[in-house]
Image (tube, rainbow, N blue to C red; front, side, top):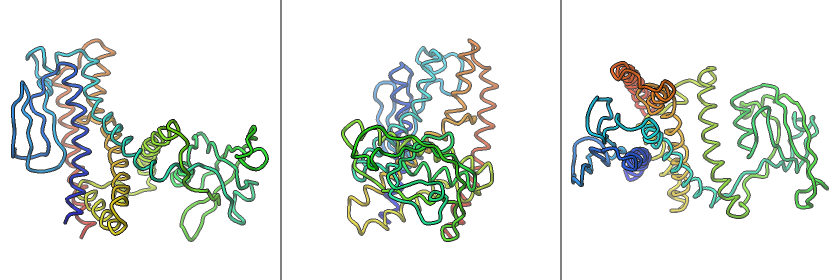
Length: 356
């Protein structure tokens, strides 16, 4: 039971931080916030301070930020959302996803502090593999796979998974003197090869073997490696969307709702609890990194009713010099909300079916 409680609170934290981003930028831009709440559902406790009601609600699923004039109502005071300059409104809407990325970065720092970074340096290749036939050797550092920059060996793995069986061009560096410790200029090379299907793993592989995680070197490397963790999650999310479009993944496999996520997080916590507190903190940090990044990305997609859909209308206003008809925009967002609700009901039933 405790595992489920932890999972619910974790999921709620990610949504709460998103709403706090809207809240903070609204306040900074002089927009009236009618209510900022922790949790959802009926109020358990609330206090009014200035123009804002601060509430704690019954269900620990995130929070909400209700702004004056947020629904596009005409008129109102000079603190109404619709009466603020377009750039101010863009900043307020974009702040939610931005705070999700910031939260992901903070937890990425926890992860990197524990395990370091996975450099794309080979310690060998498997016998008879495409990599061996292409002449790759231990010590080679892969820098690019086709058009994608490689910063860690996970970039190679993700690319092969999302582009199964496709011919790839690898750019790599071979250290002078056979070792990176010797210094000197590295020799840059390029090779083209086709991944081979591996029956055991049921995946297309190059046959490259990597050293694994190594400690970061200094504050700048630490921060860069933490930023990479967020970047990798962004890339992986878009790769997953592309795999859905190309029917390499089924919706049932790639999409989980709150029920499914809470269940998976709870199971992970239970699995790692026997290894001690730091193991649980580490695995929870990974979940926050993935979920917060995913929430930020999904909210930036130009889908009506989401932050990305609202940003699209604001960008149109910025270009046109005047806003879209509020009534028409409201209809578009309402239609988008209905579609999203339908999709969420489908995801909910899918989660429940998978749990049974």
